[in-house]
Amino acid sequence: MGKNRLPFALSVIIIFVVLGAGVGFSGISSVVAAAEKTDVAAQTGMAASPAGGAIAFNPPAVQDAPASIRDAVMLGYNLMTDTGKYAGQYVGNKLTCSNCHFKGGMTEGGKNGGLSLVGVAATYPQYKKRQNYSVDLVTRTNDCFQRSMNGRPLPADSREMTAIITYYQWIAKGLPIYAEIPWLGVKHLKSAHKPDLAKGKQVFARKCALCHGDNGQGTPAAPPIWGNDSFNDGAGMRKRENLAAFAKGNMPKGNPDLTAEQALDVAAFVAAQPRPHFAAKPGSGAPRTTSLLSSSQLAPGAAEPRTPQVKTTPPRVPAFADRSKIPASGKEGPPAEAATLIGSWKQGKVLFDRHCQSCHGPQGTDKVPNPGSEDGTVPPLNPIDPGLANKKPSIFAANIDRIIQHGSIPDGPHPALFMPNWGDSRSLSQQEIAAIEAYVIHLNGVQRTKKE
Ligand code: HEC
Ligand code: HEC
Ligand code: HEC
Image (cartoon, rainbow, N blue to C red; front, side, top):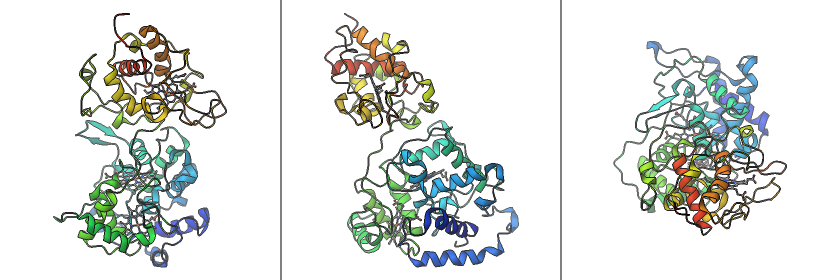
């Protein structure tokens, strides 16, 4: 392809001016720098619309955005290229969006372009037939925050998310809504080759380790590709076919020369290495993980299913974005329906492991650090605060239900973690909450039964 125009010039300028030269992967060979300079020169003959009404790649420069949106567009661009600096609290690794969406996605994708984002604003919302729900760009962007960046979702109405969406919108300027945009997406390699891990390991040592480090941990020349500081196991890049296509088109950076077989082998090897596990993190209303069990599976006393079925539900409203709706210190809202239902603790355990364990620890036993809160940790639930426990299961359930329904923000200057409002946000159904409550009560040695 190689006809990336304006964006390269622009990002060179911005990266050097805004971030300062030498920050980031300064090792990115002079090959790339040279290519960028050529692009600057090639710019003057800016894209004319090709004949036949085909879609032309011709995104406007960020600094040309009208004054009314320029700040947002610039912030959006900065968020893409230096995500940790501009949205650190939502990022859980050492990557930036631009490590995969090169130049903030202002490329034509394909060879040396990474994954383009030019025109995404014209192609969303997308209706996913298989999952039976539609995905908008906020959700899709948060997907990359939670998986590719191993972080947590941005509130839909945050300044940062607004900036990112405005940026997508600006760089989609002139593209027809719902056009087929040829440079978007990952084009999987057509090859019948069966990936070979041992060969992939050799390819890695010869062609990747130099920049990404012997253990994939990253070096000043390139970001980590596995381990704690990389994308998690729920990320799109973890999928072998995506990784292979990306590597074939872009790696080694600046001078991609892998054969399809080498790309598939090395992708299989990299995908098999350890990395963070994807779990919906605090603050997440992640639609893909909310409701795991159908209500029939939640029937009281039913056996714990071996493999919980993932139920496809429409996305719920991003859950805990609005902190103002959460009472200041718990115990304020009344108990709701769940407190009157008899749940099965075995079902509750499955849900607890998925939704609660990240903050309260396995079986609710941990004191997870909570910087910025008065207590310094999230309260353990096992054993639970004696003020909440009760020998009578109905009272015990009502005590904890108030907090689980409505959430609670710990006292302290700015607590990093707060208790989400699972009921009010409808992140969990009343049946599901009842099951979780039965489990928490069970952990504390009381059984949730009708007979009291
Ligand atoms: C580790 C690589 C990686 C990083 C880092 C990353 N993404 Fe992605 N992103 C992907 C992949 C791979 C896809 C396509 C996945 C697929 O098609 O299944 C994607 C897709 C997207 C899409 C949808 C594009 C389309 O054509 O539908 C958006 C929007 C997006 N990413 C935004 C972001 C933002 C914003 C960030 C930073 C907060 C980010 N990504 C960070 C790998 C990454
Ligand atoms: C010359 C140095 C260099 C070499 C060699 C290299 N890469 Fe990269 N790679 C980079 C840089 C730099 C980036 C980030 C690109 C950016 O920010 O523009 C990157 C990004 C990536 C990413 C996405 C971001 C991440 O960290 O997950 C993957 C995956 C990747 N490389 C895989 C590979 C594979 C596989 C090989 C070997 C076939 C390889 N690279 C060889 C420099 C290199
Ligand atoms: C994002 C982190 C987070 C998640 C996830 C989370 N909690 Fe909490 N939870 C907290 C924090 C922080 C508190 C303390 C709130 C306070 O001090 O006001 C808390 C308090 C509680 C309390 C009151 C405990 C006490 O001693 O005051 C209960 C009960 C509780 N959570 C249950 C749950 C259940 C059940 C789930 C899963 C459905 C869950 N939590 C998920 C962070 C979390």
